[in-house]
Length: 142
Ligand SMILES: [Zn+2]
Image (tube, rainbow, N blue to C red):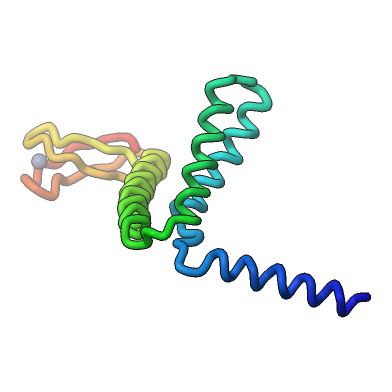
């Protein structure tokens, strides 16, 4: 009985493998599309918007279409374009986070003489700052 079931499972897996042969399958883009649809489904539990439901359906259909597609070159190009945009977004996010972290720990002062921006750690009391560009000295509280 157990062996019979295992055999059925193997046959089922073989059929799926045959069906997927020559097809594109899952990539980063379809993974992220799936995450996005999941997020939309959760969001729509509260919104209950018809438009969002349509969007969910379209995204799922597009993601299925890409997985089953036999035009592997075109799907790979789409994925590469997606990864490039994703990389740029990640870089921007990292820079923004860096600026936010610096704002917490540093004061940015402007040299009264040459307008050079100078980064000074916070919490050092009254300090004499010497401009690295024009050597002007000025006193600030940090
Ligand atoms: Zn200066």
